[in-house]
Length: 264
Image (cartoon, rainbow, N blue to C red; front, side, top):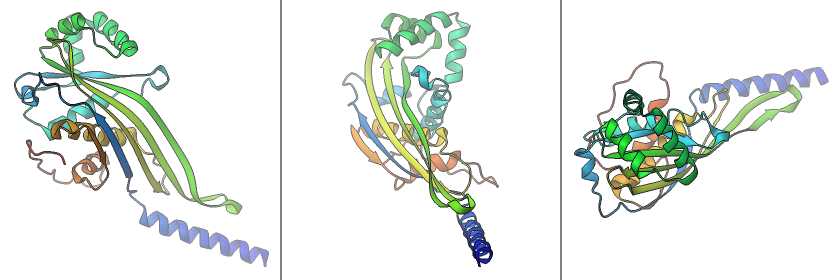
């Protein structure tokens, strides 16, 4: 009887695993973003970004999180190209290339180190570096926190079979827009995102996915001049930012995004 019961339980477990594996081949994320943004400075008009170039500085972060900030400014550039294609954006890669080409790498490193401590971009260094890049404004990102967890949801201990696992990530990002001529912080935003999925596969919640929806939410505040918001997958545009990052078996035709359409 024990052998029959064991075999039966194993068969049931394998059957459930098969069903779950079929139904969850591509896991769906659940996520929520809460933002808190400042009003845009009275001296600044968002239309200025169509007249004057804006550079994307590489993100900074705490020593314990170093390495995780790589690529964040690149994702921001992709999002900006969808939200406002008319803005004059200098990519992260082009920004650091121009800085190095003008022999300002050491000064930029010092300014970046000072910013890491003070949260202020020194006006004099900023003007020299921005002049070398050829921009009037800069976006500065900071990765403030990142946690990733995995929790077993359905498991058969007797057979050491994991039926499903919840994977979640929490990220906190800050984003600032600086006027390099005046040294003024013209806009700032802080966002915290919780993203989770439940699946049988070994895939985690990727940092790129949670970063894209977080940055998209912050820029939605900027474009729509909001100071506090909560975003969820109900917002199709933001949810599409996550789905676009997921690899597909077959290429699909890209959707055309109206460049001047507000993100609601």
